[in-house]
Length: 353
Ligand SMILES: *Cc1c(COP(=O)(O)O)cnc(C)c1O
Image: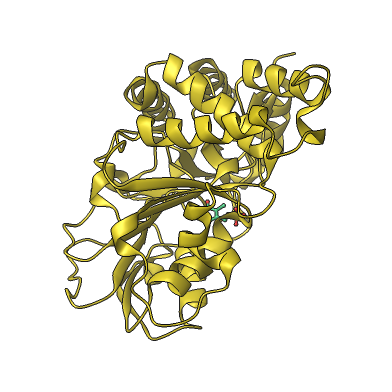
């Protein structure tokens, strides 16, 4: 039976990417496994260079002063590295959910943080708008897609200071003017690859401005100087990410996948809106095209619904423990057919109820 994988992360990946990755673990370079060759070998250096170039190419950032890095430590380490490398006096953070809060908490270790706006009192079900960003701050930090609450920034403020964005759960899912940002980071396991590496895209002009000493492993400049190989990089996650970026390029890049992602989101949200058994969590204008959060209004139908999901091969639909209900994560590699299968179960439940 086909499994429809709605997991919020680690996420579904294209079958052909999984297939090629599996083959490379056995034989990547003349009978040697990808995970047993030197990361300094030409074969692997090519992988790293390819992955870095593809990331910039897909975002339209080649030749614009940006560098791409594939680091370890997850997006969570970027909460720390961003502050370590960029925070001198004060920074502004937009608080839109659990991940923003964690980013703020880590940055507070370094200095005072100003929350430009927060949607916490409304349970993070919307994206604040119309806030001011002081122009004398070091940087402004936001989270483009709130994986847990299912909200997404549909536009970004005009910002005179470097804008830093955690794009972990919607990177490469929609066209944006990426040159608006000074630094973008994304844990691979939401929409790019397996867990174990984090993409950082940074404009070199914003670095080297803080007075503190930075340990080499936390210093973007050191990683750039070393070609993203200051130490042994996470070779397998980088390779799988590279394959996935190649897959994306073949599909027409970000613009190509964006159309598919819009179709999937429209399908699920129209079912949530029309089916009286379900209720969306996020306010309509800020709903995420990646993570649709919703609840089943009648608790008595829970067991029936979940049995039907199981029978239809639908997996990974439970909501995050802090929100409850359901969350359909529709990352790039999830097909429209999988969303159709889910919507079919939802409308079948309505017919039965
Ligand atoms: C999952 C997630 C993180 C944390 O990622 P790790 O790689 O596990 O540290 C951070 N930000 C967002 C938006 C996420 O979805």
